[in-house]
Length: 316
Image 1 (tube, rainbow, N blue to C red):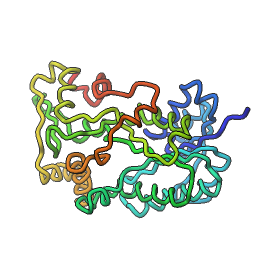
Image 2 (cartoon, rainbow, N blue to C red):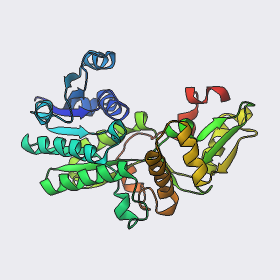
Image 3 (cartoon, rainbow, N blue to C red):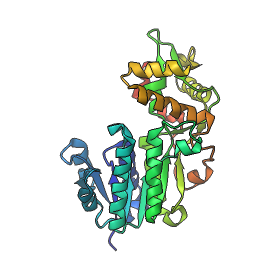
Image 4 (spheres, one colour):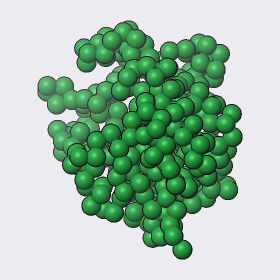
């Protein structure tokens, strides 16, 4: 019996790469599915490494419908992800997502897994109307549902990677401070993107009937800033002795982002993204239990993520 083809977009990135690795490492999934990895440049080293692992590697441009149709042709399933931050344009991301959806419809794909997020403008009744990288993916989800494509919607949580890059740093004297524009008890759905995306998506493909039309929430647990700090102290007790959490005023948070070179619009978007967590709930207050019940392997904890992590090399 021939294997069913899964076309994986972003196969050399964190989300798509995690899907590839999880399926290849699983005897049941790898015996059922053959992988076709989509990338923009098949000549780069990461694409060649995929091919060496037995993945069919193809090039496609999210702005070119014909290239998308070729990448999807003959596929039973598709994992699709777009990157808002590549263009910083909600309209462009929506167009790219719709292009993928149209190609899936034309090629009669039997299971599309779309990397989605909630429509924050709707969830908050317009209070938070600038979180475009959420709203754009939600609008594509609406379009996929309108087309009637058999689909499941995977909603990644708050990337653990973002905490050391944006929020958790040592001072020149070595004192670590976790600084976030939210209360100490805000519920953050932490997610180890490169380690755990594949665990969820593999489960979705293997459990098609149970997941069609549903949203799967990708997170290990709701964790507060204080719990993040305590986890750091547990893993790095010496560096953690003087580690503290600080609630950063909104304007100071935006000012810090400006020092990283972010334009004002992106500063406001990321601030509203943070406000979403504690004012309305990243997932609107929905529990993680059902989504986690789909996964048959342990999810990555915050402590596991930071142990030996190069981002925390100064604490080791």
